[in-house]
Image (cartoon, rainbow, N blue to C red; front, top):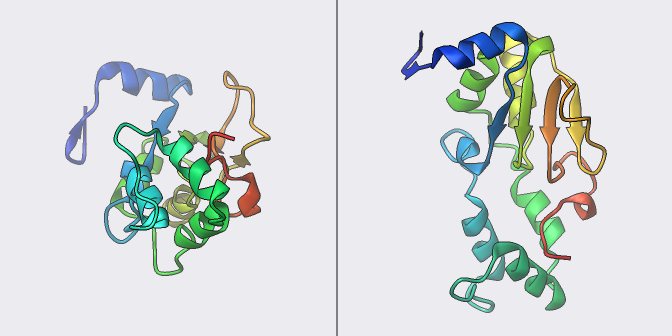
Length: 165
């Protein structure tokens, strides 16, 4: 079946019909306009700048932990950067929520901190699904809504899962 520019395999269509489809989405979804957010690595290296460059093969969460150890308010800066009032859901956010057919059927798990899937659901369906933020997550085999695995900019910055700590 063709869904806009994408050919969807029958197995996905069948899963959607049964209510079993769960979509996992990361930073790539929020990179295009008008969202314009960076990927995780670029976000991290922007925080450290030239004063604290990331080392070759350094894991991003360890790098961010090193920045925290050096007094950089990583959590607050990430929340601020990913709360840009000019950033909006893009066509990918809207296309993904459309896959589900209604706000009540949405089942998205995201590592993104931004709120764009909720905004896309509001735009597409005029309704908002249940929203979950780490550390209070639903059971994986029986949920409906949007799950923010690493927290959300809608919560306290300290709750964002960013560092190796």
